[in-house]
Image 1 (cartoon, rainbow, N blue to C red):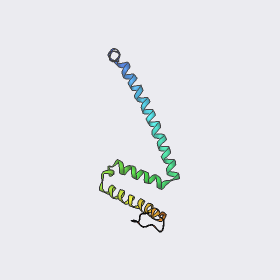
Image 2 (cartoon, one colour):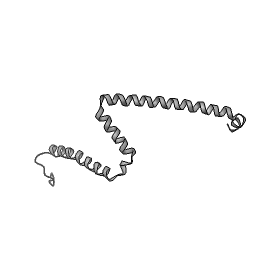
Image 3 (cartoon, helix red, strand yellow):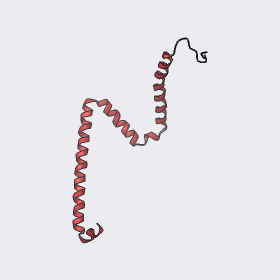
Image 4 (cartoon, rainbow, N blue to C red):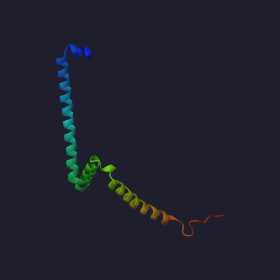
Length: 103
């Protein structure tokens, strides 16, 4: 490869330029497809799309390392655990106490 570059540098540069143009065209096409997908999603589910965009901005802006995120995670865990614990207590047999053992 190094020998062909030194033998024909102009040809190599043209080849690299053609590859770069092809890559740029593929990236532009992919970006257009993503934009169409987002527009379609925005029409169908505007609030969900807004939430996803806000969350993406929060994460990309470095929000995951903030104390506010820790508070949200703790709150979310509490809110998720309360219904689970209530269902576990409701499923418990009625005559059973916490320290009772069966013989």
